[in-house]
Length: 455
Image (cartoon, rainbow, N blue to C red; front, top):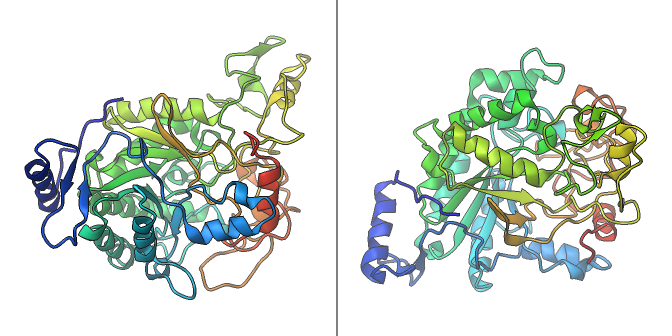
């Protein structure tokens, strides 16, 4: 896959490019400008994961290694979540952004993965991951969150690192699926669509971060169980294009997109296909698929990439798929298609994804670790990644007072009987979960037990 290099550059970016040409004479690596402390500027590449040693977060690694059996995965690279302003500097025993970047240099890593996650009115459809900024605090988001991150990443000391930024998960698809007169709409999402601060915030983030030559922006693209339907698919791509060209940004600031971030959609369903029929009824008519166009995350990611290109993004964009918790192994993993007695029995008996409903997203019971992080695993896919660190909670199963801006979402309560966004089904959540982002030992043990491929 040949990716077009960016054409829209700031003066600083052009100076880096010039330094690359002059110092390297056309080779792939160059010495950065004077005053960089000897750091070497990494030339831009089509796929930042190709041949890269990816940073292992020591904070997550220590927690994983302390669990029985956890040493089997404690060496895997995971995303570093910058989910509030205080996370940039760190403190109270946690590493800040500079500490992570410095440790990456000590590890001689080539690539660091960051999750940019602090929009005003964040995650308007799920209280568990609400953030610290109110719906109108767009100026604070720019000034106190994005600008400090961009300044740190632009430090020439880190010029040799490829920095992958996953930009604002659980945001833009909400403007399509959870607004207006839809049964799935929420008042909070209507507010964010009306004030435009999701679009403005992401546009600003892409512009500021994209001005740093060694940053690779990947915009969150939901997952197939969210925007895989006809009325969501193209509309979501259009909103993403709107955001990518807002606040002075251009599509050249988007290197690709990521799907299934912190979610559970199976990578590939082997026992049924979208064009299968049973007893004269299409798989799309099953209660599980429910007229979706896709049965799994890989087929969705590849198709959505084509849709994004047709909407105006560069032909060379790549996709990431978060496989941290979509393995669905263990004794419940089907080995054959379901019975061909009717379409529901056929799909339910053969599907790997064992969630009660595809709209369930919080600490799902029965989930397992998925494919290990790897570069270029399939056409159009830059990498499988563990952007969500396995073992970190999606949200508390009961209300827990906190100073992190995180609310209590009934979708994290195992006794909850659901809402329109999950078809009024049980939540499928594990009990006794802590706040989102906090360590959840019971979940980590279940992920290990149900890993596929097996550990």
